[in-house]
Length: 196
Image (cartoon, rainbow, N blue to C red; front, side, top):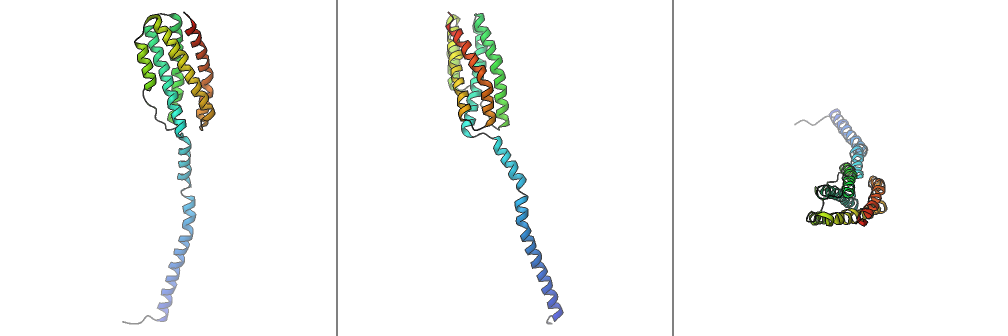
Protein backbone atom coordinates (compact mmCIF):
# COMPACT_ATOMS: atom_id res chain seq x y z
CA UNK A 1 0.00 0.00 0.00
CA UNK A 2 1.49 3.28 -1.03
CA UNK A 3 1.90 6.13 1.41
CA UNK A 4 0.02 9.32 0.52
CA UNK A 5 2.33 12.03 -0.69
CA UNK A 6 2.48 15.51 0.76
CA UNK A 7 0.11 17.01 -1.80
CA UNK A 8 -2.52 14.35 -1.00
CA UNK A 9 -2.09 14.97 2.73
CA UNK A 10 -2.41 18.65 2.15
CA UNK A 11 -5.59 18.13 0.05
CA UNK A 12 -7.07 15.90 2.73
CA UNK A 13 -6.25 18.50 5.38
CA UNK A 14 -7.89 21.25 3.29
CA UNK A 15 -11.00 19.12 2.77
CA UNK A 16 -11.14 18.31 6.51
CA UNK A 17 -10.65 21.96 7.41
CA UNK A 18 -13.37 22.93 4.97
CA UNK A 19 -15.78 20.34 6.43
CA UNK A 20 -14.99 21.52 9.97
CA UNK A 21 -15.47 25.16 8.98
CA UNK A 22 -18.74 24.41 7.21
CA UNK A 23 -20.01 22.39 10.18
CA UNK A 24 -19.00 25.11 12.63
CA UNK A 25 -20.69 27.72 10.47
CA UNK A 26 -23.87 25.61 10.24
CA UNK A 27 -23.87 25.09 13.99
CA UNK A 28 -23.41 28.79 14.68
CA UNK A 29 -26.27 29.66 12.32
CA UNK A 30 -28.62 26.97 13.67
CA UNK A 31 -29.33 28.72 16.96
CA UNK A 32 -30.29 31.86 15.06
CA UNK A 33 -32.80 29.86 13.03
CA UNK A 34 -33.96 28.08 16.16
CA UNK A 35 -34.72 31.43 17.73
CA UNK A 36 -36.47 32.97 14.74
CA UNK A 37 -38.28 30.04 13.09
CA UNK A 38 -40.42 28.92 16.02
CA UNK A 39 -41.45 32.52 16.70
CA UNK A 40 -44.53 32.09 14.51
CA UNK A 41 -45.76 28.96 16.24
CA UNK A 42 -44.95 30.47 19.63
CA UNK A 43 -46.89 33.65 18.84
CA UNK A 44 -49.84 31.69 17.45
CA UNK A 45 -49.71 29.48 20.54
CA UNK A 46 -49.73 32.62 22.68
CA UNK A 47 -52.71 33.92 20.69
CA UNK A 48 -54.48 30.60 21.22
CA UNK A 49 -53.77 30.80 24.96
CA UNK A 50 -55.07 34.38 25.01
CA UNK A 51 -58.32 33.20 23.46
CA UNK A 52 -58.86 30.61 26.21
CA UNK A 53 -60.48 31.38 29.54
CA UNK A 54 -59.00 30.62 32.95
CA UNK A 55 -60.98 28.05 34.94
CA UNK A 56 -62.86 30.59 37.11
CA UNK A 57 -63.92 32.64 34.07
CA UNK A 58 -65.00 29.49 32.24
CA UNK A 59 -67.11 28.48 35.25
CA UNK A 60 -68.80 31.90 35.40
CA UNK A 61 -69.52 31.78 31.66
CA UNK A 62 -71.11 28.33 32.06
CA UNK A 63 -73.25 29.67 34.93
CA UNK A 64 -74.30 32.60 32.76
CA UNK A 65 -75.31 30.28 29.92
CA UNK A 66 -77.31 28.05 32.27
CA UNK A 67 -79.07 31.06 33.81
CA UNK A 68 -80.12 32.41 30.42
CA UNK A 69 -81.30 28.98 29.27
CA UNK A 70 -83.32 28.61 32.47
CA UNK A 71 -85.03 31.98 31.94
CA UNK A 72 -85.97 31.04 28.39
CA UNK A 73 -87.30 27.63 29.51
CA UNK A 74 -89.27 29.13 32.41
CA UNK A 75 -90.68 31.80 30.11
CA UNK A 76 -91.85 29.15 27.65
CA UNK A 77 -93.46 27.24 30.51
CA UNK A 78 -95.23 30.40 31.69
CA UNK A 79 -96.60 31.03 28.20
CA UNK A 80 -98.07 27.51 28.22
CA UNK A 81 -99.44 27.45 31.78
CA UNK A 82 -100.40 30.99 32.76
CA UNK A 83 -103.73 32.66 32.05
CA UNK A 84 -102.50 36.03 33.36
CA UNK A 85 -101.71 38.62 30.64
CA UNK A 86 -99.04 40.35 32.77
CA UNK A 87 -97.28 37.05 33.47
CA UNK A 88 -97.41 36.13 29.78
CA UNK A 89 -96.03 39.55 28.78
CA UNK A 90 -93.16 39.19 31.27
CA UNK A 91 -92.52 35.61 30.12
CA UNK A 92 -92.28 36.67 26.48
CA UNK A 93 -89.80 39.39 27.41
CA UNK A 94 -87.71 36.78 29.25
CA UNK A 95 -87.72 34.52 26.19
CA UNK A 96 -86.72 37.38 23.89
CA UNK A 97 -84.12 39.12 26.07
CA UNK A 98 -82.52 36.01 27.56
CA UNK A 99 -82.59 34.29 24.17
CA UNK A 100 -80.53 37.18 22.73
CA UNK A 101 -78.22 37.12 25.75
CA UNK A 102 -77.75 33.37 25.39
CA UNK A 103 -76.72 33.84 21.76
CA UNK A 104 -74.05 36.32 22.89
CA UNK A 105 -72.87 34.00 25.67
CA UNK A 106 -72.60 31.10 23.21
CA UNK A 107 -70.68 33.26 20.70
CA UNK A 108 -68.23 34.32 23.43
CA UNK A 109 -67.81 30.72 24.56
CA UNK A 110 -67.05 29.63 21.01
CA UNK A 111 -64.50 32.42 20.52
CA UNK A 112 -62.83 31.40 23.80
CA UNK A 113 -62.78 27.69 22.91
CA UNK A 114 -65.10 26.92 25.82
CA UNK A 115 -67.63 24.08 25.63
CA UNK A 116 -70.95 24.90 27.25
CA UNK A 117 -73.21 22.18 28.64
CA UNK A 118 -76.43 21.57 26.73
CA UNK A 119 -78.90 21.82 29.60
CA UNK A 120 -79.78 24.17 32.41
CA UNK A 121 -78.00 22.46 35.31
CA UNK A 122 -79.37 20.58 38.31
CA UNK A 123 -80.53 23.60 40.35
CA UNK A 124 -82.49 25.12 37.47
CA UNK A 125 -83.87 21.72 36.47
CA UNK A 126 -85.23 21.22 39.99
CA UNK A 127 -86.95 24.62 39.88
CA UNK A 128 -88.39 23.84 36.45
CA UNK A 129 -89.83 20.51 37.65
CA UNK A 130 -91.38 22.22 40.67
CA UNK A 131 -92.98 24.93 38.47
CA UNK A 132 -94.36 22.34 36.04
CA UNK A 133 -96.32 20.75 38.89
CA UNK A 134 -98.15 24.02 39.64
CA UNK A 135 -101.09 25.69 37.95
CA UNK A 136 -103.31 28.75 38.09
CA UNK A 137 -102.49 31.61 40.46
CA UNK A 138 -100.08 29.41 42.39
CA UNK A 139 -98.04 28.92 39.22
CA UNK A 140 -98.11 32.65 38.44
CA UNK A 141 -96.99 33.53 41.94
CA UNK A 142 -94.18 30.98 42.05
CA UNK A 143 -93.01 31.82 38.54
CA UNK A 144 -92.76 35.49 39.49
CA UNK A 145 -90.92 34.67 42.74
CA UNK A 146 -88.60 31.91 41.51
CA UNK A 147 -87.86 32.59 37.85
CA UNK A 148 -88.55 36.28 38.18
CA UNK A 149 -87.15 37.57 41.45
CA UNK A 150 -84.98 34.68 42.68
CA UNK A 151 -83.21 33.85 39.42
CA UNK A 152 -82.67 37.50 38.51
CA UNK A 153 -81.18 38.24 41.93
CA UNK A 154 -78.77 35.35 41.36
CA UNK A 155 -77.93 36.59 37.87
CA UNK A 156 -77.31 40.16 39.08
CA UNK A 157 -74.95 38.73 41.71
CA UNK A 158 -73.16 36.63 39.07
CA UNK A 159 -72.78 39.55 36.66
CA UNK A 160 -71.33 41.75 39.43
CA UNK A 161 -68.94 38.94 40.35
CA UNK A 162 -67.83 38.72 36.70
CA UNK A 163 -67.28 42.49 36.64
CA UNK A 164 -65.17 42.32 39.79
CA UNK A 165 -63.28 39.05 39.37
CA UNK A 166 -63.12 37.95 35.72
CA UNK A 167 -59.70 38.01 34.09
CA UNK A 168 -61.05 38.05 30.52
CA UNK A 169 -61.89 41.52 29.16
CA UNK A 170 -64.52 40.19 26.74
CA UNK A 171 -66.34 38.35 29.52
CA UNK A 172 -66.30 41.51 31.66
CA UNK A 173 -67.64 43.55 28.72
CA UNK A 174 -70.49 41.08 28.26
CA UNK A 175 -71.36 41.35 31.96
CA UNK A 176 -71.33 45.15 31.69
CA UNK A 177 -73.69 44.96 28.72
CA UNK A 178 -76.10 42.48 30.34
CA UNK A 179 -76.34 43.91 33.86
CA UNK A 180 -78.71 46.85 33.20
CA UNK A 181 -81.20 44.60 31.39
CA UNK A 182 -81.13 41.98 34.15
CA UNK A 183 -81.56 44.67 36.84
CA UNK A 184 -84.58 45.99 34.89
CA UNK A 185 -86.00 42.45 34.72
CA UNK A 186 -85.53 42.12 38.48
CA UNK A 187 -87.52 45.28 39.15
CA UNK A 188 -90.31 44.11 36.83
CA UNK A 189 -90.32 40.68 38.50
CA UNK A 190 -90.67 42.29 41.94
CA UNK A 191 -93.69 44.25 40.71
CA UNK A 192 -95.16 41.10 39.19
CA UNK A 193 -94.59 39.13 42.40
CA UNK A 194 -96.28 41.90 44.44
CA UNK A 195 -99.47 41.70 42.36
CA UNK A 196 -102.29 39.63 43.84
